[in-house]
Image (cartoon, rainbow, N blue to C red; front, side, top):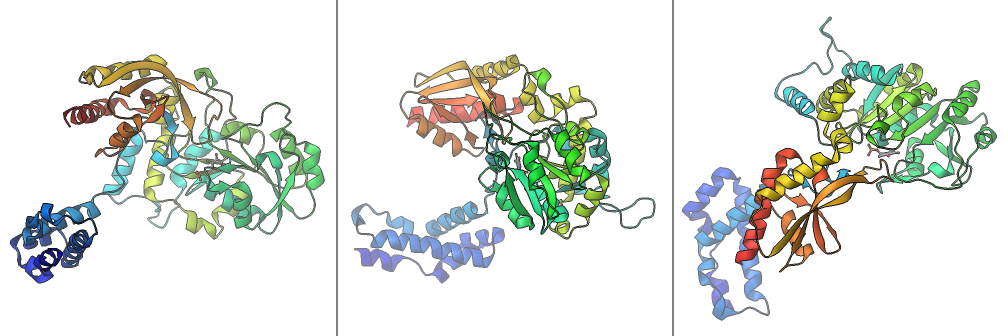
Amino acid sequence: MQKKYLKSIPSVNDILAEKLAEKIKNDYSRNDLIEGIRAVTEKIRGEILAEDFDGDNFESSRLSAESILLEVDKYLKNIYQPKMTAAINATGVIIHTNLGRSILSKKAVEAVREVAEHYSTLEIDRESGERGHRYQALQDSLKKLTGAEAAVVVNNNAGAVTIALAALAADKEVVISRGELVEIGGSFRVPEVMEQSGAHLVEVGATNKVYLKDYINAYNENTGAFLKVHTSNYRIMGFTEMVDAAELTEFAHKKDIPVIEDLGSGILFDLQKYGLNYEPTVKECIEDDIDIVTFSGDKLLGGPQAGVIVGKKKYINQIEYHPLMRALRVDKFTIAALEATLKQYRNFEKAIKNIPTLRMLTEDEFEVKHRAEKLLKLLKKSKLYKLEISKDTAKVGGGAYPLIDINTFVLKIDPQTISAEEFTYNLRQQDVPVFSRISEGSVILDMKTIQEKEIAQLAEILNDTFWRKENE
Ligand SMILES: *Cc1c(COP(=O)(O)O)cnc(C)c1O
C-alpha cells in the first residue's frame, strides 16, 4: 500500500504544469516554487514511509498536484511572512529589552517617517552645500540638556563605553572599583568590554567598599583613565562605601587623567517628584566634572537604540575621530528619532506626557486602573474564565531602578478549562502576539505597559481566544 502511494506522488514537472503553479509563480520566483514543491513532496513521502503510517486513513486526495500546490503556497507564505511584528507588552516591564525597550513618541515616529520617505540633510551643510557634520542636529540639544561641552552618538551604550576606552585609554591601565564590575543583560560584561577596547583592567577596593585612597594607590604613569559604572541593575546594600565622583575627578584632573562614567540608563531630569528614587542625572555627572558620560538612548531616555556620549570637548574629539567611530556610527533613522525625542525635553511636563517610557513611569495609578476597566468592559462574559481587576506591581526593567516596584493594575484571568501556560501560549500565537505573565496559576495582563490605543485590539484577541476555546 505504501508503494502505491509513493508512486502516486506526481513529479515536479507534472506539478509545475498545473494552473495553480502559474499563479504561485506570480508571487514567488521559480526557484522558490521548486524548493516548495520539493519540501512538500518530501514531507508527504516521509509520512508515507513512517513506521506508524496508517494507509487506511490516508487521504489520497493529498497526492493531487493541486493539493500539493496549495500546501506549497502555505509553505512559501510562511517563509515570507514578516517574523518581527508589533507585539502587545502585557508583562508590566516598561523597558523590556526582548520586546524592543522604549517605544517611540509620536513626534519621533513622524521624524523617522520623514527621513525614510525623503532625502535628508543627514550630513550636508546648507550654507556651503558641501559635506557637513552627521551629529550636528544632536549635539546642540545634548549640550543644552546636559551642560556638556560636546557630544557624539554611537550605536548603543556598549559601543559608547568601548569607543571611549579605546580612544582615551588603549594600551593603558583603567582603574575601576570591584563593586562596579557588573554584567548587564548577559552580553555586556564590564571586564570583557574593557578587554575589547585594548585597555587593561585594574580592579580596586572590595565589592562593597572602595575609598579614594584605593584609586590614588592604583594610579601610576600607565594609568589611562578612571572608570565608574553605574550599578544600574543591582544594588549593594548595607555596609557600603562609595567614592564621591567630585572627589575622584579632583584627584584625576591633578594628574591630567580623564574620568569616564557609564551611567547606563541616563536620566535627564530628576524623577523624585514622581515617587521614584534618586538617580544621578547626566547633568549632575557633568557638574561633578566627569570628563565623559555615556548612556543608552532607549532606556529611561525613551528614544531609539543609541549610545550617547557627552563630556569635555578635547576627549569627545578624540572619540569622534577614532577609527571605531565609523563602525559604530548611527543611521539617519536613529538621528531623526533621537533628535525628536530630545527636543521634547525642552518642556519636561510635556515630555513625561508624550514620551511613552516616561509616561508609564510617572503616570497616576488611576490612569492604569482606567485602562483595566476599559478592557474589562469590552470582554465577552464567559463561565469558563474568571476575570478580575486587581492591584499589583510593575517593573521598570532595562537595568534601571532595580529595587523599585511601580504600582499598577492588572487584569487577572483564571481559565477554568485550560492551564495558564496554555492560555499564555495561545496569546503569543496571535497575529499580534501578546506577552503576559503568570502568577500563582493566574494569567496576569499588566495594564501598565498596555497602550491606550491597543485596548480594543487586545479585547478582540482575548474574545477570540476565549471564544475559540469555548467552542472546541
Ligand atoms: C544597559 C547598560 C549598558 C548597555 O547599554 P546598551 O545600550 O544596551 O548597549 C551598559 N552599561 C550599563 C550600566 C547599562 O545599564
